[in-house]
Length: 446
Image (cartoon, rainbow, N blue to C red):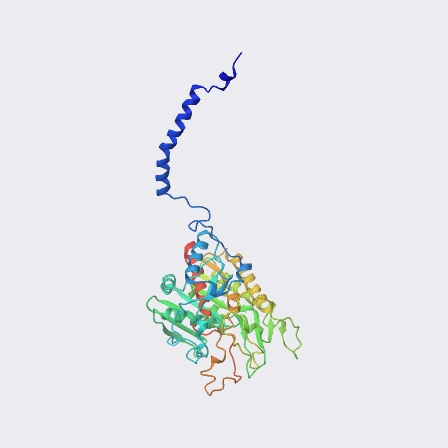
């Protein structure tokens, strides 16, 4: 019989292990402490390895601009860009305070149209100059003139369209003129509607073409009918004839399509009209006309460029820039606000949203057809939302010099709540333009 004492007696190898384990721990402990000292372990909540938090657009509106300090914004942008592999969505963002201020001196830039020269005209509330557009999920760097000159040396950029195209053109000229002086080499004499500059330092040509419909049209006048006539089946040859000379084009239309007009599908075939009482034409509104005009424009560009053109061409369509009249524009309407809207205060809707949607849709449709044409790129310069949130950036009464010079601060004077002060929010359009150009360069070169 086996005794209980023998059952409980440990084997000799077990006794050996019990003696070995403590000595092993004593030997490994110094090594572990040395390893921990040289290579500390970071816990999950350590700030060094904290997972970046991307604020979704739906919740970002609860943050007011003052909550972003310059350092925190910079750190957030670096974290987001490090994990974001998709192209930057410049349309989704908010205006935040910017201590750096404007990109150029508005009182010394000599190419600003008089009606947009707000500082020279006496505007004293300069807070509108100290905001910048911050996309929610990526960064938008300040405009770098040297980078733009690098892309566009020995090239030609043309701004084609209505007065918003001219507004953006003058912004670009002022930004570039801060480092290199342009020379005016051509003007048509028609109220400066067709002008051309050259930057000798880089042989960069910058042109503006007045074409408020892009397609061919007859503008209303005091001597003729009180409506425009648009030939939606053909483009305006005043700009189209020079298409082979361009390397970059920025189209901008919209506001002139709101005016009364008669639309032609052929030279003699009337499609309908917009707000034409007294004329025996079908009222069709302007949305269909705008879409048709854009499609004709893009088709002409694609067909004429083809795949045999010697130089590459980039086409941008700047989307609709909303106005901010409080009251009717022609009845002493004004835009008195002095700060940007927060996202929660102003939504893109109604006519502004519809026009933008048509423009973006036509750009996407054109991009699909342009794939067959080598050396041709098309993109939307989507500035509608960021423009909608800036009711403070218009000339307002300062479209005229010192409108309250006689002390009549309460006077009701004419306001411009469509165009933009220079410097002003329109400078951001060119910052986005440059960043898209930079993306194109990284992909395959302009």
